Length: 122
Length: 221
Image 1 (cartoon, each protein chain N blue to C red):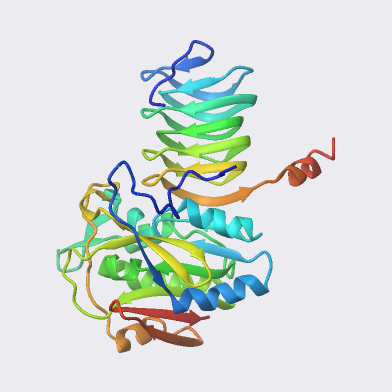
Image 2 (cartoon, helix red, strand yellow):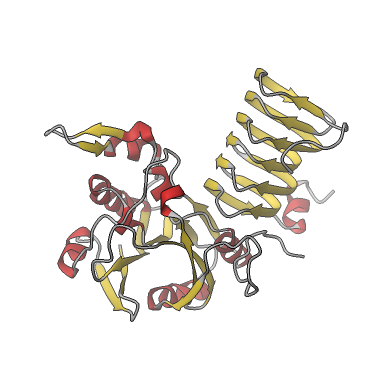
C-alpha cells in the first residue's frame, strides 16, 4: 500500500505539520509531520512514505512506510515496510518487517494471555 | 498464521529477483544455541541488518530481542568530521552518544555478525569497548571476520538465525546501503592478534575457522 485507497480514514497531507496530542476513533493516514503523541484505540495508523512522526503511537494496527521516532503499541499488528525508518520499541501481537526496513529498538511480542493479564483478565 | 513477512527460510525462487541467499553452519551460533536452550528470558542484542526472522526466532523462545543496525547507523552523514591531521573521519563520540545507548550489563548475548570488518576504523575500538560494558559478566558476543583480503566490495550479509547452528546469509547491496548514501565497504582484514587485542578486556576468546574463509569469534565478558 503506497497511498490510502478508501475514504474511510482521516488524512494528514504532505504539507501539514502538527505538534501536540492526536487522538481519534477512525483510521488515520499521515503523510506529513507530526510531533507529540498519537492515540487511535481500536483503529489503524499508516505513516506514509513522506510521513515523519516523532511520537509514541497507540493503535490497533500500525503500518510504517516513512519515518517514525517513538514507541509503537499496536494491539493487533505492526508492519514496517521496506522504506521504513523506525526508532523506538515495538509492543504488538504480530509484527511484519520487510527487508530493507531500518529498525532500532526492542521488540515485545505479546500473546493473547499477556494481553489479558495486562488488562486485568477482562 | 505467518506472523512475520520476512521471506527468510523460503526456498522457492524469489519473484523480485533479490540476491540469492545461502546457508552455512556456524560453530559460534551453535554454542549460543545451547545457551538459548538452557536459559530462559535472555536479553539479546542483534547488531546486524534488521532481520524479522531473528526477531521471531528469539521472541518465540521467550527471549528479549533488541535490534540495532550499527553499520547503517555509521553511514549517517552527520558523523562526518576530520581527524587531527585533517583527514576525513567519523565522530566516534557522537556515534556512541546516539547508538548503543543501553545500561551497563544489560545483555546476555550480543550478535555482531560481520559488522566489525565493515565498520569505519575510528569506530571499531570504541564500539567494542561499549559492547563490553553493555554485556553482562559471563555474557557472549559473536562476531565474524574475514581470514583473507577479499577486496572492498566483499559481500556483506544480513544474517538470519534458522535454528541450531544454521545460519542463512542474505547479501546486502552495499552501494545502495546506508542512510547517508555512503558506501559500506570491507575496511580491513584483522589477523588473530588484532582480534585478540580488540577483545583483550573480555575474559575469554574462542576462534572457529570455517571453510568459507570466515573466522568466527566467540568471546565471553
